[in-house]
Image (cartoon, rainbow, N blue to C red; front, side, top):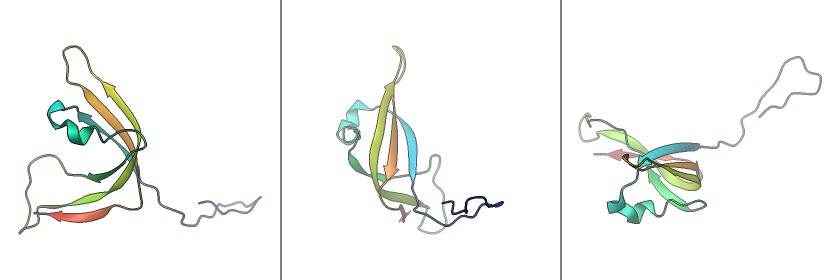
Length: 103
């Protein structure tokens, strides 16, 4: 957050509140509709983010994943006649993300 005085030649800043937000795009899957129907605008949801690809790790911990509550800001769907339906979500995290070890 900028705290410069009027007429100052250089800008000064102080730390402000942290805001975390993001966008994800997924393939719509009608076989798991129970979870995807909760992703509606203004709904609070719990999110877990996992990396893609093969899982490899050291010992019993394969990776650490961020988790936390979020509020859905926007939902958009797209798809063609011969294509898979995609859904895009915009979200804002409530508070901060925590890290959980995944075996």
